[in-house]
Length: 239
Length: 397
Ligand SMILES: Nc1ncnc2c1ncn2[C@@H]1O[C@H](COP(=O)(O)OP(=O)(O)OP(=O)(O)O)[C@@H](O)[C@H]1O
Ligand SMILES: [Mg+2]
Image 1 (cartoon, chains in turn green, purple):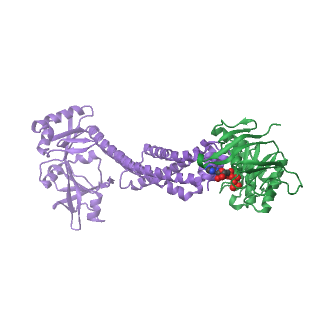
Image 2 (cartoon, chains in turn yellow, green; image 1 turned 120 degrees about the vertical axis):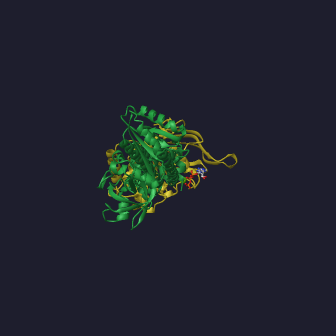
Image 3 (spheres, rainbow over the protein chains, first blue to last red; image 1 turned 180 degrees about the vertical axis):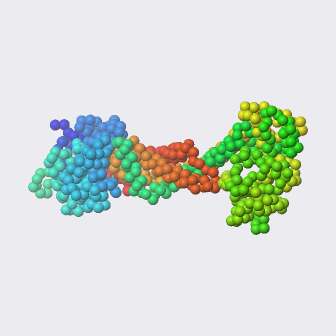
């Protein structure tokens, strides 16, 4: 089976020659459909940068990136916007919901840009919110929701366009332990339903709930292993 | 993204920041209100002048002293007045078949007084035909007769303002009035005419021409109105008058203008004036536009994360561009509409004192100009928003 995501010698450099930051350095990685990948690594190791490139929010300095076998190098702004709209769902650490806008409207946002009619938008947003346990909160603005609830709204927003892949950059980073595990349960369930999930995290406990852990350091992948259930002290690289 | 959705977004953004939106639009509101008000005064004046001239009839010719040059650049009158009554008599006695009537009049300012009080007023002295020709009727008493005119009777028809100021609530008919300290008898009060450009037309006294000559002691007329026998021979009549006057006067001593010429010259002056006033007000619209631009730039900076997020979920640069552009246009359009309302209301309120009417083109101009301002000054912030890199925008704190 062809991988959903495949990169070859992917690099992202910042700054000039004498003061260069190699945020992503020669990364070649393949992710298959249905995988649940956790990316771990110290701060500044390039996790977010890699995920932004995968999510078509950023462009690599060099190297190749294939999304479902299509190379993305030559895509225009509008084509990239379309890919972000209907192939990729993004979940951020800081939720990034529109303030003063109801949960439902926040979830509808990608559909608005996909030119989906209002009635259909409403139905899909409400169905997803119900599924994520927010059946009572359609009209609540983010300020009236807990962190965990806000992140669930954000996940609903990421899923509303039935994306190929769900990308989550430290989705539990701003949440307490209980809410973190709730969010992880949701991601695991979604993965069980067949959605490909790539998630960044700092916490080993969280990472271990994925099926595969990729460790990064200084922009390079230093470890890439399947998670073996019930095996204590497995070596997933330096976390 | 559909335009209706973007429209809703823009409305929402404006609604959320009500106070700021109002303050932002204030420049546009003031600008449009000022344009509407000034243009309405100008066009009201034009309408008034036109209707007054129309009342005189198309078969009217004016003789003015000196060489009068009326143009958009202004009015210039040179040389001294050489139009005498003797000349006017000659004009009448020439019995030109084209001329029906010669109506000279004197127009000066005098002090009108009685025992109670005194007031500076406009004095018009003319034949009794003056009333019919200028459409002035009495609301009380009567106008003077031809024989009273011929015999230099010291009688006066006064305006409402004079009547009120000098006689309070009493009827002025039969009462004494001093004009330049000469005693006259009030025989009539003419119907209120209102005011034109802030000048009170009812602050006036109309007396027989002969009595006016005695009062001023001069042999000169300020203005002459000539009625031709028909509208067709107006050019012939003009030539006749010219021929007769040139026997005694030189070409530079008088100006002959048909009603049409005089009206179009005056309208031209008023038109230029209106345009100039409107132009000054338009400057404040530009200032209003700069205000919108400024606030939109602040708004883009403030909403950097929002823009990043929209892009992350699939907004194209053009979606963002239109969203912010539409916001600016709506701000200035709503400002324009409010300004229009204020301007029109203001115009209505002052119409009692200054003739004013809001012409349709001024409404279109106001709305068109304010949306143009919105587009022009909204473009830069909107382009900036649309070009934001989603990653930079999302990382922005
Ligand atoms: N716009 C930028 N300009 C310059 N350097 C940048 C930029 N964005 C990221 N970097 C650098 O690239 C490197 C990788 O950053 P990145 O955000 O990917 O790290 P991370 O692994 O996500 O870290 P964290 O765990 O703290 O989120 C860092 O050294 C960072 O300073
Ligand atoms: Mg990061």
